[in-house]
Length: 369
Ligand SMILES: Nc1ncnc2c1ncn2[C@@H]1O[C@H](COP(=O)(O)OP(=O)(O)OP(=O)(O)O)[C@@H](O)[C@H]1O
Image (cartoon, rainbow, N blue to C red):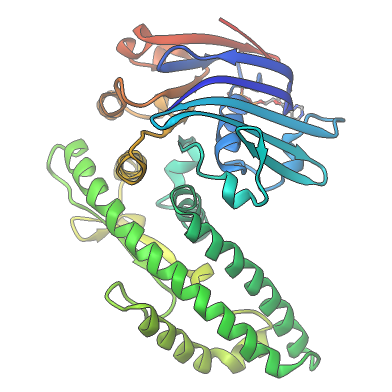
């Protein structure tokens, strides 16, 4: 899929800007703090209704303004799609082809993006939260059902934590805990089952890509690491049974601590190269290759799921990759994947890429080419 036009109003440091993209590769170049990342963040938010670098939508609205608007015209295999997202201090609204969507979960998925930013190099070593966020953002854009279950799970979890806090100080109704636990377990089982399935698919691509980047020397394995004793082979009812067992074991401690101690919000992902944990034993280079393999695997996975390539957003990351990794990445995207790149220094980018790219100069919230 291709983004043909993008217009921003009061988004970050852009008062009003309209851009047309007729090339596959677009490079935004400029000094620090001029608005390069803001542009590709806008494309990410247009697709996923969430930023990759903040959970506070208010930060996306231009200072002193009431709202921000992102409008994009996409060309997909299935036809043209017009997307509009309005962020205000009161919330956000998404329109697809001019029609306002009742729920954001119905809006998400009309455009697909894969972002590779310096923070992603932290995916392997960073906190489990970073890896769960990766799972949720990636899975959310290819599965509405997943997004739906995840949203409900988060709501129930919040209520359950609230109740546990009350029970901790001798308030609240204890029978409510069983009711909320039932609801949480049904949703946790759905989320878990889908995450196992997603990892299995991602593994298939990532393994091959990692093998190629490491010139056949390394085998990458991705494992879903649940906090309960559930496994890939279990069906939904078996997963639920296991969650109930965990609940019975943890119940007293949960009340003492005033917080939910089991469930998908405590799960993690593990990466293994030739059987060794990359998080503990991986060199910096191996961590980079793993992160790159995951991103490239995501591109293939999205293609296999929806029959269209996602848009690739590379935020200041090309210069972080050595020549070999960079050319591997560029080989993957060649002619297939519309790509937006930001950089402060054009010399870090492969000349073959520059030859087919449109170069945009970014300075203090204005863009020229
Ligand atoms: N809500 C906002 N309203 C107005 N300006 C903002 C807002 N949020 C950030 N900015 C401004 O945007 C600029 C940062 O833009 P951006 O993050 O895109 O930088 P960049 O060009 O990618 O730089 P770097 O190379 O350092 O990453 C800063 O000048 C910052 O003050």
